[in-house]
Amino acid sequence: MARPRNVSNIQIPPRVNAFTPIGSYRHKAEVVHLNVEEFEVIRLLDYEGLTQVEAAELMQVSRPTLTRIYERARFKVATSLTEARELKIEGGTGVYSSNWFICNDCACRFNNPRNVPLNTCVLCNSAHIHLIHEEVVS
Image (cartoon, rainbow, N blue to C red; front, top):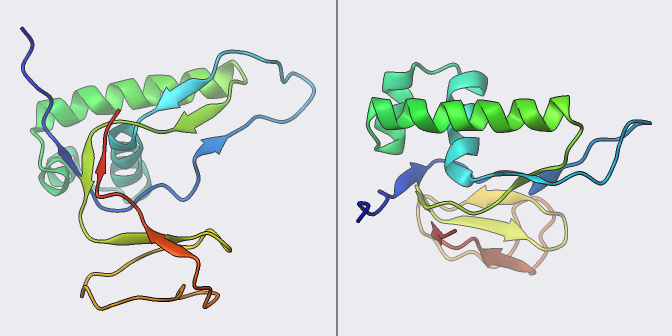
């Protein structure tokens, strides 16, 4: 029996849920699914420029585990770009590092590291905000 997956620490939730190709070659191909851990590894290594050791420490996983996640993520992103397939960011197992909220009106995502009561969006002052669930389960 396989060992249960460890929960990864996710610093920032994705700002969007999917990317869709546009242009003349677009077709109804199968969707590529990128989970939140794979998104976080791409963000930390390629966007933030961290080393694999630094990223592994932030995500609270081993460096070999981070490398395996990164290889899967790179293949999925390359498949989506090469084959003009939609890329959806969803699922996986992770815990957000602080309380994150999303506004239903302007789609702003913001956190609440001090855990002070929040009633409105920090960007548009809308009262239509909700907590992004702390644990993401596939």
